[in-house]
Image (tube, rainbow, N blue to C red; front, side, top):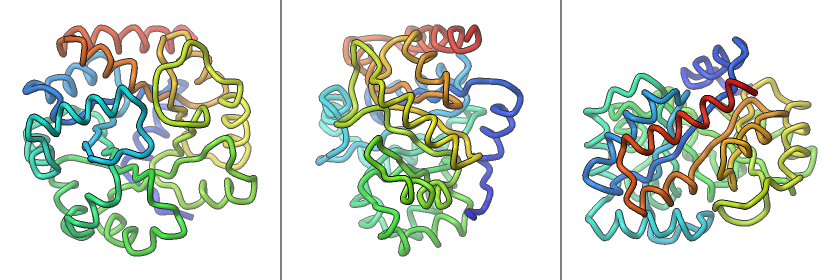
Length: 261
C-alpha cells in the first residue's frame, strides 16, 4: 500500500465530503502571467491544479498541449524557470506537475524531488515512466512526500489495474480515451467503463482526464468517478488570447456544473 500523501489527504477529504473534484491544467511558462492563471484557477474553485512542464518530445500530448508547450519553450521556459516562478505562488490548493521523465532524470531525481517540494508542488505525473521502471525514482519522491500519480488507460488489464492503483499516490488518473490529449466533441464510452473498473478496485480518488471540453462532458466523466482534469480546452483558449481572469471564469463554469451534478 502506497504511503498516504498530503495530496491524497486533501482530495480524499473533499471527495468524502461529497464534492466532485476539479483539476484544471496550465502549461507552465505560457505567457508572462501564467502564474496568475494558477491563482485564478484556485480562486474559481479548483481542488488541485496540474502544471505542465514543457518537453520537446511530448509523446502523450495532443496538438493543443504541444502547441502550448512549443510556445512556452520558444519563450525560454525550462524546468528551473517554472520551479523558480512557483516559489512565489501560494495557490492554497495542491499543485501537481505533469512532465516527462527525461527532464526529471537529467535534473537528478533527488534534486528534482527536493526542488519540486520547495516550489510547492505536491505531486507529479510522469506518463512515460512505466510503474515497473519507477523503482529508481520513487524513493526520492517518497522521501519528501511528493506523490507519484499513476495513469490507467481503457486498455489496462484487470490485474495490472489493481497493481497500478496499489502503487499510485495522491489519486489515480484515468485516461478517458485511447490516443493523445485533446478536446473531443463527445465523451468516449470508454470513460464510463474505465471509471467503474477503477472504482471497483481502489478507494483512492479517481480523476478522469483527456478529451473533456465542456462542463457537460465534465459532469458526465465525473458521474462514475470522483472528478475530472480539464486541460486542452483551457489551453486552447489561452493560446487564443484568454486572460487569467477569463480562464478563471471558464473554470468557474466547470465548478458550477460539477456542483449541480
